[in-house]
Length: 210
Image (cartoon, rainbow, N blue to C red; front, side, top):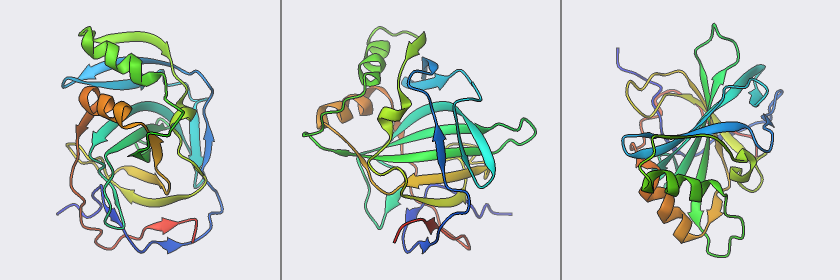
């Protein structure tokens, strides 16, 4: 049978609703993580501490990894962004292989005064051809966009092979602004190619804002 719940999608005409169990983000300021290269691009891999988690719909997922795509994989009302960050979480229940991925659109904003220190660490890792840099510190909260309480929700898949349909997606409404120079650094050293939007089929996209 053809897969019917593929990601990414072009988010259009969502159903506006309120959640009984809204998204709760519980990340500390400096969880342990390492930088690892895969296919010549850097990923940020966290330690798997179940205290670093997000919760929604009665489920909890622990922080697992960051990775980037150029251009954005998700489109919003037909608009594509220069970069998309995927903040990947695994279900805290070991018997459930489901994932939760937070999608953050990143736009160019040269007036942005918040440049996450992680950008420089990623560049240095690639330039020195280092396979991994253990136990660096990064604050994942720096990567949240303005108004992280506003988001879209839908059920979908991984955007890389085998495209498993095991992902609960949270895509934030507002993009995060970074200077163009920093975006270019991330594209060069960390961004994977983007998959094109896939058919929605019979799925619904929800939004918790009007």
